[in-house]
Image (cartoon, rainbow, N blue to C red; front, top):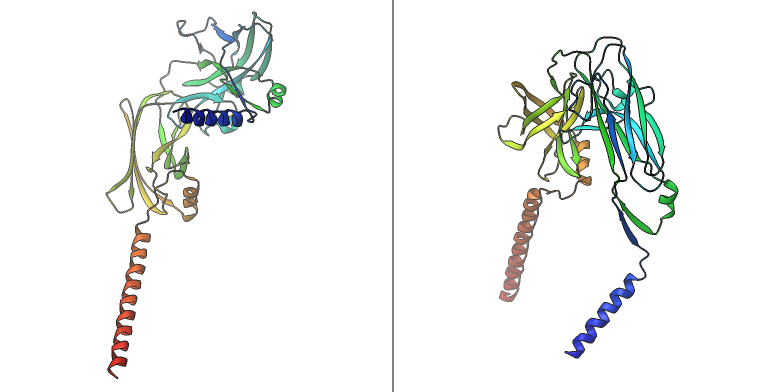
Length: 346
């Protein structure tokens, strides 16, 4: 028993000695030390909402203000910028995009283009607050539907401190506050209109998928959308892959890639058929399209993880080679035996 204790103590000592030579420390930071509050103006459509829901006029210029509170015990620099709404590949409205070059082609007026200074920095003393103001100018022509975006706030990262911490790993939860901005000029109802823009193989989280690019070309918010998609080989009624999702949403004038998982199967070249149905309330869209996967697109398989390779023909080929080898060996041994018997008879 004493010998076992000594061995255990020796093992633990070796582990501790090894760890003492690893120059690694982990620190987690997850404190929320600032907050924001929208200062709601008089032309707010619904005063019960905490975000901006403004009734505007063509060509109208207006300032909208957000108060930023520094709840920490030191001075903080807060970065504020305006973003426009997009749709991410999970089928959810995303307020993180600020580069208008990435906007859908149907979006005439990204919110970032209507604001004179879409990016600002504000230095706030400890325990104090400051008001950040942005100025919006609406398009001169009357606009039906909504323009959607947000004011985005986050604490500025000190790059000098970040670069000096070479021997440590900092786990930082960077909190950002988003204040939604919804602008409209009238109450004219605009219905969403969906289009299938493209079908292509791709990787999602390093998994093989077929992506169907869906566009909402109208200035309306899509809510509670469901999609049912099936993929067939051309000329076949056998479903190879399928996907069904519900409760999705889309930003006005945006697009996203609806992914159909290939269940870790490799992407194979050939011609396929996509049948897909999208439903929003009483509106229904149906597509039945052929698409082709080229040999160059199958290179995605090399980057995929957990892919299930189809070794069927390898097994068949290997089996045939083995069978031929066995037959040749049997023939060789039989001839050798017959030759030996012939020599003995002589």
